[in-house]
Length: 458
Image (cartoon, rainbow, N blue to C red; front, side, top):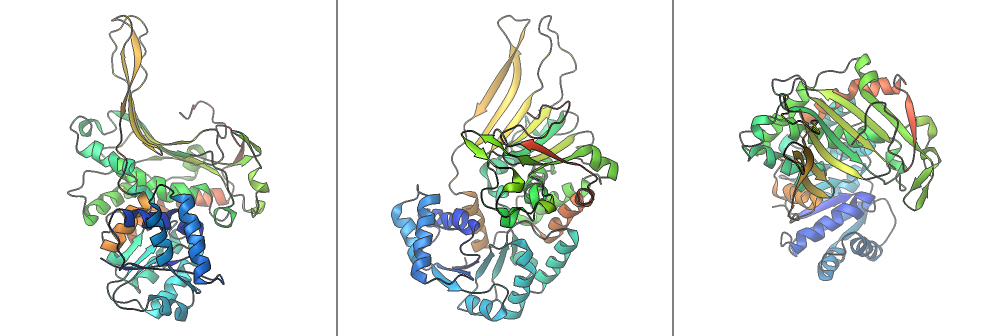
């Protein structure tokens, strides 16, 4: 296990909301001890004492349930260094030391190539590992180039392209439900499943993240990485094991099976939109273009939807719909598997049965199955819902990812060829949207999103 972690982008949202709380959870769970060294670096001019005070405040805010002595131990132990992540000399001074180091790039993706180049020039101790956040590159060409740069720094097994969705308990439960239950796996195919929706709709608006989000948008921020990763777990063939090679081979098979989108497909099967001013709950939300730091000329979307088809024996004929939007009326974060209707209903009254739907709630974590049963009379139908109780996870998603990094388990990280294949899937959409082939719709904040005739979206 590696006992040294260096985080570049020390005062960013990622470190404050996720990495520091994840380290506290690992400490509370007995996974870290006093030998663990944490160094946080960015360009800001502040003392170590000032940074430790900031870290303590973030821990109290974002993980108040962790024991106070654990939060204090993390905050007190962190070392702060002012450094430029793109300067080889600064980088070398941070990674030098006894034994391997894990380097976490909690930085804007646009800086990755220069930082990776600086790491190459600085050199990393043998056995070190490198962690990169999504999105990996800005398009296919940049992803290919970034993979080329990374290959000069570390072997593929030491590069962790992380996506915290893969560490969510419910996302992993998709695999468990499929592969460990005889009742599901035989019907997990297009003969029985008509449609799969993978949705991450949130009431959250921009919330001060224009510096990152306005250069990315919903398609790259959510669909290209998070939702495609969930698609892989839903649609993959059963792997021989859950080891890194077997699992990642089956995931990339799914991406390679996606039927390429033509220009007509992009027009018919994709939607994009951004929110206008509106009201969400009790708060007024300005329109996206009026948010601080937004450049309206970028025409950044806050809602993206893509319909995909897989050219495979298992899934030919099933529609996979990936959707994500901000500033919507309700939080809906789930995988909804819609089964085909039965071929015949022997009921004389109320003879229409609603389709069976298996829902994996991503946040909060849940699992429900909508069935049809008999009503007050034996000849009538009525809806029936079964709900599973989910045990709380031992670690938050980022805690699981960091533990895998420190132990060198790459099963839940994204392999280089997989990252490139994900960009190939959406390359036609990016090109068409850049050329305004698909109109940029608008929807009021607090609404159900842009209008789509004939679809309820539930």
